[in-house]
Image 1 (tube, rainbow, N blue to C red):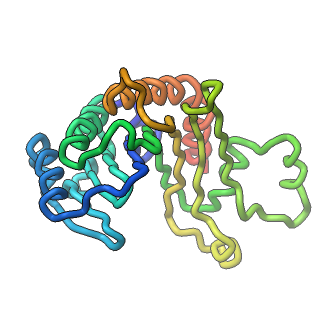
Image 2: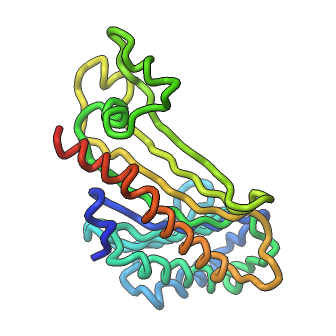
Length: 247
């Protein structure tokens, strides 16, 4: 198993390709795309549609780890929940990006953005916002507000976005999503919910002449892995894990 599996209750590796133009939505085109995916992953056999022209192919979710893929009007997505390794997830995403130009007529010009996201879910019964304050603290300028007598933190979802090149085409974003609201605080009833940490590496704009969707994705995958390993694990994931463990 991947070393990421020991850092949270669930983790996943997703790929999103957002297009400038609408993707084909005909029956033959959509089914042909998913059939190419299924040839490589036969256990992806659950196919269905959602509202607003979204089509889904996925494995059985009760396995604990499963693959999924979607085609939306302007987005192609691929995800793997609790993969045995990140490379297994990346191979799946490569396949989706290899098939898309032919099955869905996606041109290298038609890239609004391409991203790789690592997600980590922590199951916790309690006030997620207070837990984040304890585990990660708050910005020094805001710290005194958490000490106001009688005050209860109702919203604390830190995020940081930064660019890695001068033209800001390659960007990264760390965000944390809590699921504790005013109702839970008011009633004192905190259901067992998952708090999520997301780290995304994204590039914007059409591909360069020497690029393919697969090569661009591989660079994002390497970047995402490097930054999560060197900056996110010790500064965010482990402090959250430890704070939950002592509650």
